[in-house]
Image (cartoon, rainbow, N blue to C red; front, side, top):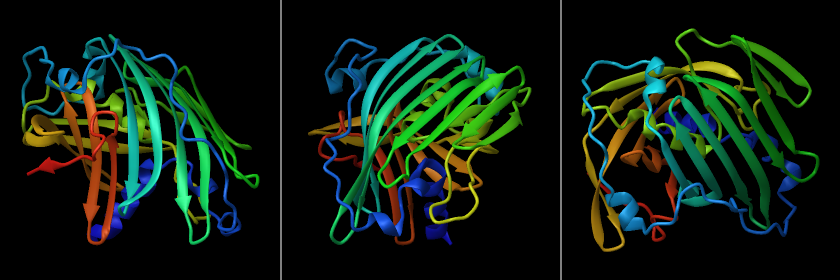
Length: 299
């Protein structure tokens, strides 16, 4: 059962996989270049140790549950990162992102590459993602996947008043944006927008928000994306993560959703990793630019 929940988490966060996986792709090997990188970082360069050891401004906070209306209290923050994505210890993709938080506005852009290995082939598909939100609600979201054999896909969503209009290929749906606000989740980099909102939580503190989830079920007939879910997060205990030969203290956040549970690791407002593990199944997306030798968290 636990392994099944982990597999559901993989489905929950791996946007666009359904349009890439297919029997007709197994015999195809593409010569795509490595995952593209964002050309203009949003912050000045700093060493990994300086970034992760940077002090975090202290502000009063309590253990009471905080809903999405607290999003507009997020402080200004800018960051870039490069993610490595593994499922069951096999690399399935990479993603480069840039995120900017200015008061109640969040801007995130990312580019990346999904990789699917078969017996005689490696299939690669490049993607781009852009997410904008203001005052705790998404205002726009775009996702474009460049895949072979006609499996490319595009999602474009725009807020129209209190309604989120979502166009996916030839289908259009309209969904009400909750009065208390919501967040949008797409590829793994979208989780990098959570630590700036959560870093004032004390251990045991709770946070929740409705979430628009973009994606689909690989091999399924019905899309699971463009639906509203409830995302619940509890601040866990601090842990030690290995950075080269150093041990760095990181915060943990236990993520609970209808698709299963996972753990998000952060250092202040900086995203470090997203990990889900179960019986015989595992999923991890971590900051390869900060942890070139892999991500290791000690209990």
